[in-house]
Image (cartoon, rainbow, N blue to C red; front, side, top):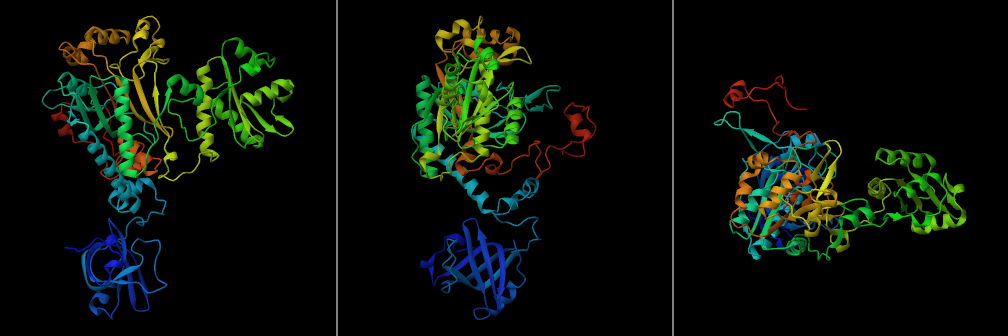
Length: 597
Ligand code: ASP
C-alpha cells in the first residue's frame, strides 16, 4: 500500500515518488496552496497540495481535518530555501501531492495529539488510542520493546529458558492482597492471580531446569502510587547451584547489557551498600545517590552538651543526626516552621534548624551552644557557610534515619539539588545493590514479625541461631537493586532445606496445618533433592519508566489503570449480571454499582 514511512524520507530521496499513509497532524493554507503534516509511527513529513501539481488532489485536500487517515502519492522534493524546518528529521524536504485517498475521517479529537500539551490523565486514558498516537508515547512503547528485546537476547546467550507459569493459581505471599477469581466448577473456591511466580520458579529448579526466566504479568491488590499498578510486569529469574554473588553478577551484567543496547550507555559498576549502611547514610533502603546531603552523626560533637533534648536522647542511647542542605541557610522563618511540621508528620518529635552564616549560627538554639560546640556541630554536619543544618534527635535511631532520609529526598527535589543530566550520560544512572537486609520486620499494628522479603528467603548461616529467640537479628540472603531512589528489583537465595522451611513457617506463626494447606506442594517438592537456588525479579515498568526519563510508570504501560485501579478505557472493573453471579455461586453484599469512580 505504501512505499515509505513518513519519517524515513530524506533529502537524498529527492525526485522519487513516495506513497505515504498516515494521519493529518495539522493543516495550513497559504495563498491557494494547502500544507499538511502527515504523521505515522516513524515521524512527520510535510505534504503540499497545489493546483500546479494536481488540481484534483488540491480540491480533495480541502476537506482534510486533523486525524483524518489518508494516503498520499507525490514526488519528494527539496523545500524552498528559508522554509527548511530544523526541528524535523524530514525538515529539508516535502512531498508534492499528486493523488489523495481518504481512508477515514475523524471527529475532532477530545485533545490535540501533541507532545507539548498538558492533558488531564483520565481523558488521556479514556482515549488511550489517541494518546498513544503522540510521539512521546510511541517512543516510550518502542523503548519498552527495545529493553525487553535486549533482556531476551541476554538470557538466550546465557543459556536461560523462558517458561510460562499459570495465571490462575494459588496465593503467593509477596506482602500484598491477592486478586481472586471465582471457580464456576468448584463452587465456593477461588483461584488467586499470582503476586509473582515465586513458587513455580523454585519448582523449576527442583525440576532441574537450572536457569529460568520469564517476562511475566503479576497482580497485587495494594494502594496505588506513581510506581505501582494492580497488574504489572516483572522480569522473573531463577538459577540453580548459585550463591548470592552469582545472582548479583548475572543481574548486574544484564542491566549493563540492556543500557548498552537500548540507551547506548556504558554503566559503571553498581555501588554496594548494606541495608544498615544505607539507612545510616541515606535514611532509606532505596537511596538516591545522584546527590550528597548524607546523614551525619552529631553525637560525638555534642557529647558534653547541656542542651536538654540532645542530652536526654544521647544518654538513652538514641541518635542526634543531621543533614546539611546546600545554600538554604537563609530560608524564611515560615518555610522553616513548615519544615518542622513536615518532620513531625514524618514521625519525628521535632526538628532543630540552624543556618550557617558569616556571623555564626542562625538557630532558635544558637544561644544554648558553647563556641566549641557550635563549631563542632557545623563540622560534624559537614556544612559550609550558607547551608542549612537540619537536626533530628530521637531515642529510636530508626526514627532519626527515616525522617532525615525522607527530608533529604523531598528537599533535593524541591530545591533542585539533583544535577540535571542527559540520559546518554553514564553519571545519570546511579545503580546500587542493597544487601544484608534483616530477615524480619516487626509489625506494630499486628504485633508480629513479618518477612521483609518473602518466607522462602534464606538466612545468613551464623544468624539462624536467633530465629526463635531474637528474630530482629536474623540477616537474610536477600538483595535489592535500586536506581536513583527507586527500588528496581528484589531477590534472594532460597531455603532449599525442608526442615528449615518448616522452622521458618513456625517462626512466622504459620501452623503446620496451615503451612501444609497453603504451601504443601512446595514442602513436598523439597523432599526430592532440591538444589541450592536463588533468583531475582526486576520490575519492567519501573526500568522502562526510568530509562525513558518518566516519573510515573503509567507513561510506559500501554493500558494502565488510574490511582483507583479503574480503567477509563474499558470501564473495568464493572458489575456483572445476577445470572453471571449465580453461575459462579456468588452473591454480593454490595448494591449494584453504577460503575467505578
Ligand atoms: N518473587 C520476588 C518478588 O516478586 C522476587 C524474587 O525473590 O525473586 O519480589
